[in-house]
Image 1 (spheres, one colour):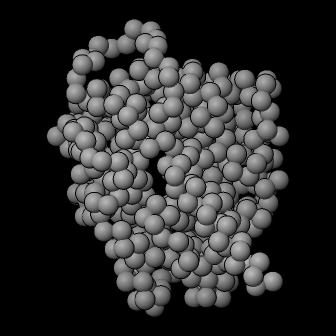
Image 2 (tube, one colour):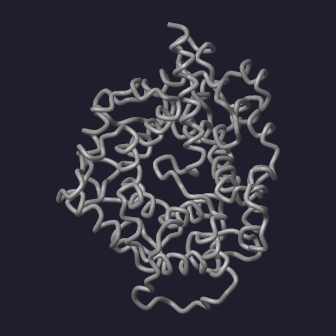
Image 3 (tube, helix red, strand yellow):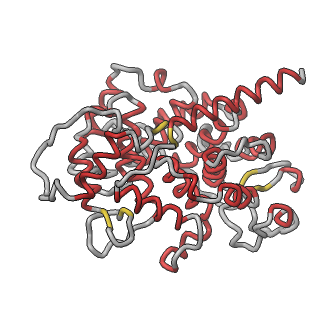
Length: 390
């Protein structure tokens, strides 16, 4: 644990993320069906600040497990995690097994969020129904478009977001052999556009969020070099396209305004490609600074004074900046909108980047690197246990 500092931004972010693990304000009622995702943002935000000791980890772990859908409870033997108990399921892990609704089902993004949250909070994942969850993830592969995944049995959405969620979940559970990685790589390759970026589906517009999902998935299944080899035209186009998404901050598509969430989607993609040092770091920090709400202690989507901070943009601002922790780029780039570079927010963010108080990211999973190392130890324990039973 890094000793506490007088960094005011860090202190306010800790308070904000802790608040997000509890009761949310009425303005966030639309997020109630995705409480597991909000918990991930809050837990991982605290993890990046090395401050998870300020929350009751065991209480949150039990809450996450109460959202687990066990394969033994269903005839098709498919497990996973639901996003919330909004449909009436109990928040008690034992009682939750008794509650059933025809609308109750797993969602691949909730699986990824739940597994990541458990890992961050120190759980060893021993209570996760690995076999059932992997079976549930495998069943989400689309038969009419190999390599594509849908969100769930109930939710028919399907695009690159759910490819990443499925791949990342299988990676965490050390079960990539449960899905067809060759099909995944082929599908992702079909989604690269003439601009260099990746789209959510073939023939659509390139998007920074979809590009992150594509690049991270390829890296996790060890197909990055085969689909977009280093030095290839496709790799160079991708890097150029990503770098051109920076104005002051970053935006997701050509011609769109900057948005703090793309601090992560763009910088993480570039970090996976080992090109994050090409980002204008000071300019990125300036934009994020202008999106700081000092009353709430969190980040907004844009600098608009009427924009309200939310967990997603606050978390992705922070994890995005963590991608630049190892960067020594101090260029100021082109002229940007004026900001008091001596303001405490700007100074505090620079201190976080340069002092080690903001943990570096493992971009493929959007968690701090030290927790990825912990995951590798869990995988090793599983391998030893499985070998012992042979």
